[in-house]
Image 1 (tube, helix red, strand yellow):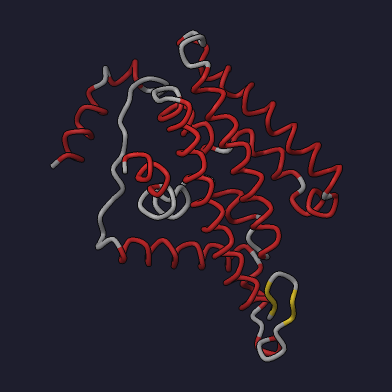
Image 2 (tube, rainbow, N blue to C red):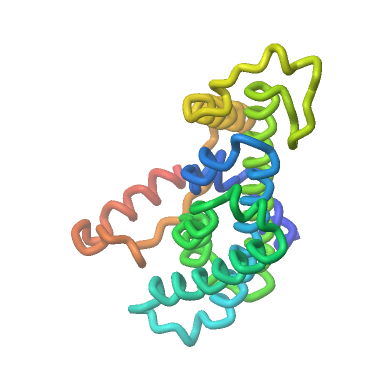
Length: 227
């Protein structure tokens, strides 16, 4: 049950996009259509799972002082592999995602899971966390992409919906439409959970303000979260 909970929490309860509000840039940029949203979700999930496994396996070997640069090197390696495979076998998707495929390296979802979960847990649990978070990210992107493409272009995954085509609202495939759908989905998720916030993990390790606040801020937030 514990492992099932690790797998499922990233789908809704701690969805990285709609609850934790991570990865906003690729979320807004690649959800103009279902195909691009799905491609970004699958690519990010693959990198997330592989990087979680490797970082968990090497967690005792990576010096604490250089763990963030080490994580970035691992993530960048897997992103490069995904880029080359996609360019070789799916060139249309590679061109569709463009620069956002390379920017998976700095996606805060991947680095955040490496820092908050993979470095503290075993390989199996880290893999399950990567799968769960990746599925949650992919589902959120596909949902946003579906809404924006149906309303904005009168189609779904490139398939024209004849009845809706004349009523297409083109602004939904533009930036304002992305923000509108994003905000509405976040509101619906908050309503579904009765306004409850996702449980946050507080840690001073890796925080750039740790030296300035003398750990008082994190301790105060942690106490407020447990009330």
